[in-house]
Image (cartoon, rainbow, N blue to C red; front, side, top):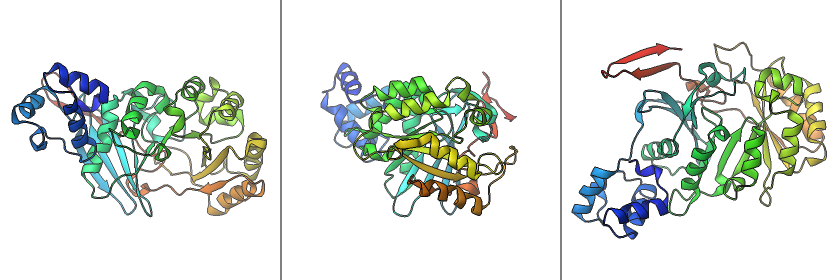
Length: 355
């Protein structure tokens, strides 16, 4: 059993069934999530017999580190799951803090035409413990405490709602990683039913919400984000306008600017009309497209980006330009992708399948 898959109540119940006092679970959680110790032998406030028994019952890891690719502003980690898939996690170096971009699925089924992750399709959801382990593994590899987590890696988080919710619970609970809810962001391509579910969820509606918009026109958005066909743009905006926000919080609209596709001044003016009188509810992140050699899109020139931003500013809409970090290691927005996938057969021999 993977110990990272248990919440506090579940672990208390489990250790009690093993013959230990319930408070031992609190001690274990303190070692794991506060000190990032993942070896029972080092948990000195537990008896030696208890440590030996717990070592036989529980495991900590299900991911195997495969590679670590550093750059000037980010570090990309590649992990292999027990069933042989590769996932990517990116540690982003901000000016005064670290942000971890975690994956929630192996691949992605949403199919955005500008996103490299979609090229391999969806293989499976990640379990909650596999999501949390990404944080634990990376935190153990750095001396600086990670304070921010964004669910912007591989996959559509809201398509894996239950596992993402459980991982978020571990991240924000006092007994867990104890991150501020303001420092956890869930990004979605705009799954309307799941957004409604999130709006009714006391835990999930208090973390930051980011929505990949990428076009204010339904037809164009459907072309570059096919999910729009079953999640209409106007209905999506209605759900976002009604979404219950904590005080002083805004929904982030992520807008990837693609040269010659959605970066025209007319697109900016249409976005102003789409947001309408709800400008205080939203802020817009303008993200110049990060090219991938496997995709037919280009990055717009800075002049176009600034023109787009100026239109939004002129209409009192908060709009920041986000130059994605991790481009050097293909760890930036839209670039995460399993370029090769290793699967093991029953004889334990690996076969490498190029995508």
